[in-house]
Image 1 (cartoon, rainbow, N blue to C red):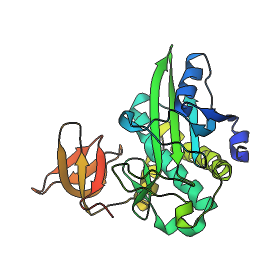
Image 2 (cartoon, helix red, strand yellow; image 1 turned 135 degrees about the vertical axis):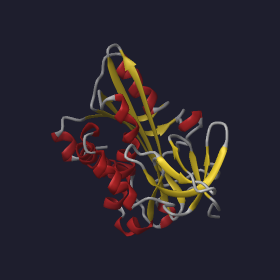
Image 3 (cartoon, one colour; image 1 turned 180 degrees about the horizontal axis):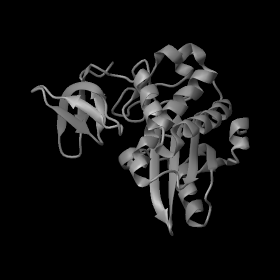
Image 4 (cartoon, one colour; image 1 turned 60 degrees about the vertical axis):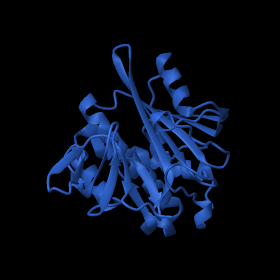
Length: 255
């Protein structure tokens, strides 16, 4: 899988595997042994792919599995903003290789990409301290040719929607889009621009949603994002509740 020229100019490197346990795990292992990136790890197949909350991420050949390792990506208070940066980059990449799908792509808070209301992509961002430095790994799985039958949320893939896109072609677009979106974000200095772009493509703004938190479930209207990216939920009683982390579902999940 080749890198986009923008990535090359930004001194980003790339290691491609035919098969690996997890691109995120490999990136973190390299960071612990001294690697600081920026470095993409891709694989044609994962044997131990992971999603959020320890969920298994199905990893058949034909989809895109990629992780980007960054050192000192931003101050800790800005790192949660990365999920919006990454979601926009993935959307940009899909639009570049399958422009006919652009109007059907939406962003689900905080970092899922939906196609006609079904999940197209999973993003897992992990950060840890290695010595005196902070390293961040951005894991991305895009359903190009396959999607899981059940995920707790409807899923789809590009081929099922008539867009036959090879993973390497999508990766070229993604590596360029990620370089551009990280530059726009500027380590958190320009998150306002990222937030504005994300809201332009957001799923569920103004609609009733269900948010599953660690110990409860809440409902309300998805009003907006605050300046830090928290979901602002207007509860039935009228109060506005900021949501920092949770799983969002529409009040009625599409069939």
